[in-house]
Structure formats: C-alpha cells, structure tokens
Amino acid sequence: MTFEKFSQYFEKLDATTKRLELIDILSKLFKESKSGEVGNICYLIQGRVAPFFEPIEIGMAEKMVAEAIGKSYGKSKEDVLKLYRKKGNMGLAAQELSNKKHGTLRLRSGQARDTKLSVNEVFAKLLEIAKFAGEGTVEKKVSTLANILTKLDPTSVKHVVNIPLGTLRLGIGDPTVMDALSLAKTGKKDLRPVIEDAYNKTSDLGYVAETFWAKGEKGLENVHLVVGKPVRPALAERLPSAEEVIKRVGNEFAAEPKFDGFRVQVHLNREGFLGPVIARNSKNDEAILEDRSPRGVYTEFVERARGDKELSQVKIFSRNLENMTHSFPDLAEGVLKEVKAKSAILEGEAIAYNPLTSEFLPFQETTKRRRKYKIEEKAKELPLVMFAFDVLFLDGKDITQKPYSERRKLLEKILPAGRQISSSQTIRLAEEKILTNSKQILEFFNESISEGLEGIMIKKLDSPYKAGGRGFHWIKFKRAQSGELSDTVDCVLLGIYAGKGKRTEFGVGGLLVGVYDKKKDEFVTISRVGTGLTDEEFRKVNEIGKKLKLGKKPARVNSKVEPSYWVEPKVVLEIYADEITRSPMYTAGWDPDTGSGFALRFPRLVKFREEDKRPEDATTVQEIEKMYKLQYKKK
Ligand code: AMP
Image (cartoon, rainbow, N blue to C red; front, side, top):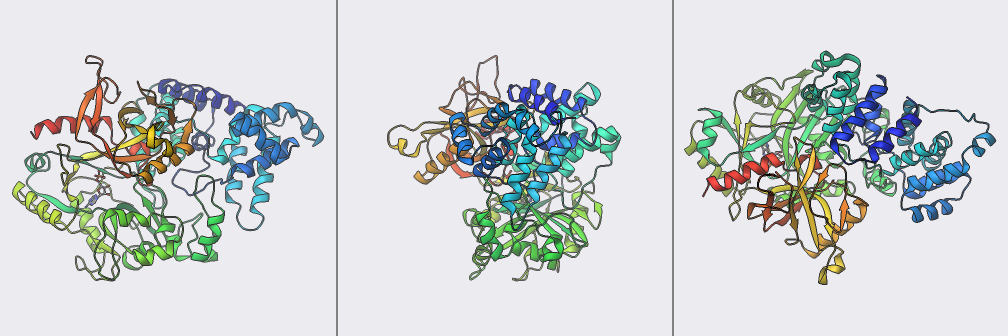
C-alpha cells in the first residue's frame, strides 16, 4: 500500500470519535493491505514503529522536526516554527508548506513527481531515525525525516510529522484494532477473543495481526509466550467476605501477603536477548538526560558487544508493561545471580527497604525508584527486593496452563534455599500458606495488616495463569479504609475544569475523571474531583493538562458533561470515595430506564498512577457495578 493511500485512512480515522466507525474504517484499511504490512500499520496508527513495550522512540523535539520541515521546503527553522504557532499543529504547518512547494522542489531535486513511498518504506525510515545513536545523531535524524517529507504528498506529510513528535492522537484502543482485524478477515467480530488471547500472551499487536493475517485462526493457536515480550498480567477479583471466598475457591487454597509495592514481570534469557538493550551506567545517565525525547522518554541503543552484556539477559516490565530494566539495575543483577534457570518469566512485587535498618518502606518511598535518571544513586538509597509469587515460563516452556500449585513448586525450585531469606537476597519467595477455612483467612489477614501490609491474596490451587484477565483464581482481600467502600477506584483523567479563586493560580479547579467500559472499549465519566489535592498536585495536574490538552472531545469518550478542556485519556489517578451512588450527570454504567450512571461521592485523590497503569487498566464499569452492589451487602 502506498503511504498516500494510508494517509487517506488517517484522515477518515481522525474525523470520527465513534468506536463503531473507527472499527469500520480500520477493517477497510486492513482489507486493502497485504501481510507484511498489517503489523506495521498496527504500530503506525498508534504513532509508533515498534510494539508499545519496546523502548524505541523516534525522539525528535519540535525544533528538530521544524528544521526537517524547513529543509524539505526551503524554509528556515524559524519560519516553520512561526507557522506552527499560527496553526497550532506541526502537521498543519508542514501540510501548508508542502502544498505551496508541491512539485517545484521535487523537480529541482530531480525526483520524479510520481515517486510513491509505500507504508513499509516510510516505516523503515522512521525506524532508522529511532535507531540513530552517537555522534551526529541530530543531523542524521533531521536529514532522514526531511528526505521522507520531500517524497510525500501534503496529506501524508501532515500525519507523518506527528509521529516523531508523539502527537498523533487518533485515540484508537487495542480492542478496537482487534475487532477490526476480525471483521476484515471474516466479516464478523467473532474472532476477537482468539486474537485477544494471542495478544494477552505477547502484548504485541503488530505481531499478532501479522500472524492472523498470514495464517488465520490456526496461526494464532500457535502463538505462545516469548521471553522478552511482556505477558498481560493476571488480575484479582474482590469478594465481600471470607465465606464468599470459600464458596469460590473450595476447601483448600493458598494465601499470600499482599505486598504494597509495584508489580514487576521479570524476563530472564541467559542466551541474551537479541535487539536493543538499554544502557545503564551513570555516565550514560548524564548523557542521555540531555537527549530526552519530547515525551520525556529516553532510549539508548547499545550493541551487546559494547558492554552491559549481562543486563541484556534480563528485562523487567512494569504492571503496564513498560520496559523498566534501566531503572532497576539492582533487581536485574539479583535475577542473574539468584534465579536458577536458563530462561524464565517471573512475577512479583518489588518493595524498597531501608539499607540501614532493613525495614520495608511504604509505597510512597518505593515508588521513588520508578525513575529514569540518577538511577544508581537511588538504588543505593532505596534498594529493592522482589517477592516472587508466580512463574509463567521456565527453561523454554510456557507453563501458564499448569495449575498454580505446580507453578509454585517450580518457583520454589528456582529460587535459592526455598523459604529461607538471607539479607543479601534480592529475589525472595512470597510467603505462602495453605488454608482450609474462613477463620484462617481472617487470622492471616489480621496478621498481615498488623505487619503493615495491604491485605492478603487468595489463590485457587488448580487454576492456570489467566493472562490479561480478572477472575476468581486470584482474590484480593484488602484493608478497608474508612467509609463503606473498601477499595479505591483507578480513574482516567478525561478533562479539566478551570480554576476559580485561589485555584486560578494552579490553572485547575477540578478534574473530570472516568472509568473504562471494557465491553464497549470506551471511557465513561464518573466524577468531578476537586478535593484531596495538595497545591503541588494541582500544579502537577496543570502540567499534565498542558501536555495532553485536546481541542475536541477525544475518541472513545462518552460524556454528558463538558469540562473547560478535554485531555487525551492517558493518566490514571487512584481515587478514594465514600460511596458509589447514581447520578444523571455521569455516563459510567448508564441505565436509560433511570436516566442515571454511577458516580463517586466525596471523591479525593490518593495518588497518581501514571506510570504503572495504562488508561485501559483503570477500574472498569463492570468492576464499579460489583463494588456498587458489594457496599450494600456489607450493611
Ligand atoms: P490491585 O492493584 O489492588 O488490583 O491488586 C492486585 C495487585 O496486587 C497485583 O497487580 C500486584 O501488584 C499486587 N500484589 C501484591 N502481592 C501480591 C501477591 N502475593 N500475589 C499477586 N499480586 C500481588
């Protein structure tokens, strides 16, 4: 497919916010593409040249892109920036210049007017830009982008420049893409669960799309876990009482402490991972800092032969499947030294401790380790341990289908000295008790709470690992805070209300937040949050707002209220509320009979979860509905 054709689809996708239309347009786009192209198209519509978990960023700031545009159309960088400020969007500025120059420049540079770059050619060039490193990087990036632009039509140019800037905001979610793939291939959406299953195992939509396109449903059955590609994590359910737990899990089950740190998924491959690895020494930290891309993410490509050889055998992913290896060198080293396996995927919770007293630290301290610079310094100040609680892949085999009890035995085998903990051990086995009744659940729960933990996790002994799903194989029992709701709600920031009075200073008076409707793959509103934020947090929201501000309601947002301005749904906030009620203002769980949706009463901010949850990982409407019912059961 030519990029010109592809960009016409971009235009159509950009013009709608309705999910069904997005699916329809995408499925037409897929139908017109060949295998070998479909995967790259999946990455490009997300504004990327690799799956989201690969730290491959094209990394060009506005000035660099403006320089490339100028170079293509015979203008100075300043002229381009001026036009950009007038238009408010770099794509529109580039399109106008391309329109004006259309033809002349190509003729002058001897290029045929009908040079048509294909989708794959543009993809390959953008990937090349992402991979430039070392001396002369800026010049190489600028001239390669300029070269692409001169060979594209004005509409293509408009969309392409938004890719390196990270401002291509089509708002297409992965479930929408999966529906469209099924529709394109079979005329129905029926195969979405099969596609999703393969996606849950590899998190790589491009790879799954490519396999599906070339080999159909049969091909997807052969998609297995791959060391190096993050597995979408299994999630826990809630139940209101220990008795209800017994009903679900039977008369014998496992219980583990619920640690309050952050979830990590560790991939070990002693043969070494192919492809890029991330530099981590402190000298590089300084150098990399200056080269931060507009999204604040930096990457550095280091040949395996050029040092950091050991670390290329370990990858660490966060709860939202971001590659965090560079932030946790101490964990990576621990994995290499302590895990007795050739290859493995382990899951666990990482917690920071005080190196002087060996005491575990609260979440607020632990989370300081999720940083991208001055890493070595923080690793000394706040070293991490990982409490491993599951193993999904071992010595070349996907073991997610084995029952939990067997996986646990394997986990015990590969960690040093079973349950004995030595102070120098980084990877430790999560304590596990086999329980048989509700009295024991409550005893273990109280014991854990008194030790300062969050609660306990109950695990069904015969259940497989359910990638990407919430189910009753894992049940969380959390400490109740005050009020009736025993759990917090992870909400997505959707819009911002301007500040009045004292809050004018912060630029923010309130936050419009929503939750995720998994069935419809859309974000629905649930509350306006105006309290529980410190001055500093208000300022932070203002900063986030400035970065993510949109001129119109984003795609896949369903709302009856209008904030002062909309933002791209990206940031997840943990909200605590007294109660879930119903209100005609909000669309979460909208019931046309009563004309009302769910709402949060007295919502306040607990913490930002921008780094460990993606918007689609927010609390779902389906969970809210359960929490709504649970609060009455308890009374
Ligand atoms: P929540 O985020 O409240 O839904 O709880 C689920 C999270 O608890 C998981 O994603 C883990 O990060 C964390 N967790 C802590 N301890 C455990 C454990 N023993 N087993 C599974 N998950 C745990």
